[in-house]
Picture (cartoon, helix red, strand yellow):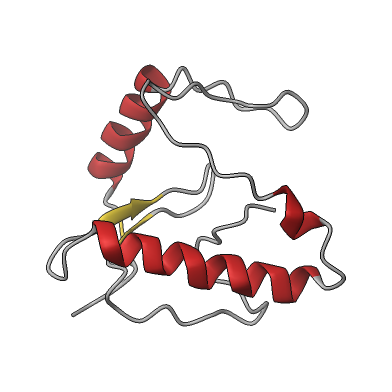
Length: 113
């Protein structure tokens, strides 16, 4: 099963138009949050990951936990979107390969930089 499939230009335009509209997305590097989630929703507190002595180890732990949640929610033959504002976006299945790049990150990291 192929993983990390780049979105086509048509898919990209549709996905981001939908995301901007549905989440009232207002990108910012200083005002947070930059979007609103519809109700009901679940919020996970990941602030402890920023207090870890090694952010790299904390990041790996968060990736492992996120991948388990994704695998619980997404069937083996289904894909989800991995969005990264102003970067390449992908279709990805949590049941496929999650190889890391030269920086030790997934193509779209769970913990944004």
